[in-house]
Image (cartoon, rainbow over all chains, first blue to last red; front, top):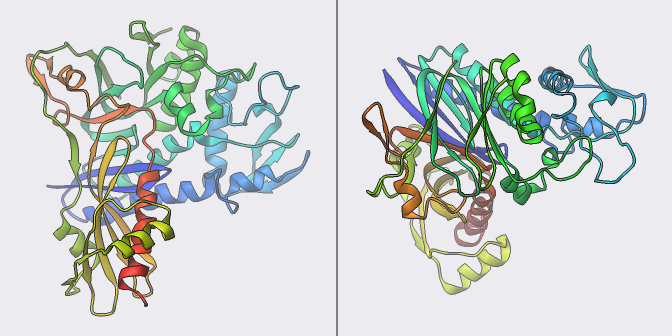
Length: 265
Length: 173
């Protein structure tokens, strides 16, 4: 058995891929990076040729064909928006105090196309990174490696090996670590994300007001689900418990000056 | 999926001083990016004028005057360099084709602090927790951390600076 670890700048962060297996490890790792790059190309909010940019150009009642990768990610995002009653929302919210703007309810995904009932902008920053990690893990499984971990700037998933992960809020917090095996872990930090890019997914989806400072880590079978659930936990706190349990996830929340709290049903 | 959440006890001794990962050595990067190619070492030391021109062209300040570089027979080039971020120190290997365009980019190693906390020895020491009676050491048992998104902006800045270095020091192509 050999083991290699490689890292590349992708998704606006560093993506590290570890793989262990008998042979063809380099090719397996290469296929994982290619999977991440494919998601980035289709789902980036910053590229004019992405599917996200195409959706932003749609008028009310119009539809646009999208890549199957995009359709699958949007379908999952909509399912999570519905399940969380909009606490997770892939549609960019209106600023606080603005009249009702578009939400996930104005978005339809069917037969490889996206339709909108009013003009809207998507931001998959709350799920795309996790989705890319899932695609990379699928590529590594197809390549036949014995174990692997894909870590996209702290959102990670592994199979065949145990991973210890230190949780690192921007604010002071008691030190904790999470052991994850055959699953995913993702974290969101309101203060860190807002400082980095204004992070619209860290606004209350109903009122548009910024969320209070907090840090959430979620373990789930899939990284996209873990990624999206971090936003639900930050927005809803203990009220997110039933959804976390239903999705077979575990969630940990820390707010400045408080103790770590596990969000349970 | 299995998942365990562990509160780590504060410990009085200092843990390993840096959170660091080595992905590839320079030799491995040479072999991976230029398989079967005989590279010739071609290091340079930047003059004041070159450093100023690189800064002006790339918009990124030049920290080190030494350029670690290898040349392929066809004019392609490998540059190994470090980028310094607010919380991280990253060594990267940039492969350029004979026209000076990016052919590949690999991260060789990575040292970080995050949220400003890792630079604080007291915070690092907290990670000398115990797990089933054995110490749980940051960077060894705990190989990952999960927190606020780490930006790759400094890597992008570094690549821009190296592309300018290539134009100014090694060009005209």
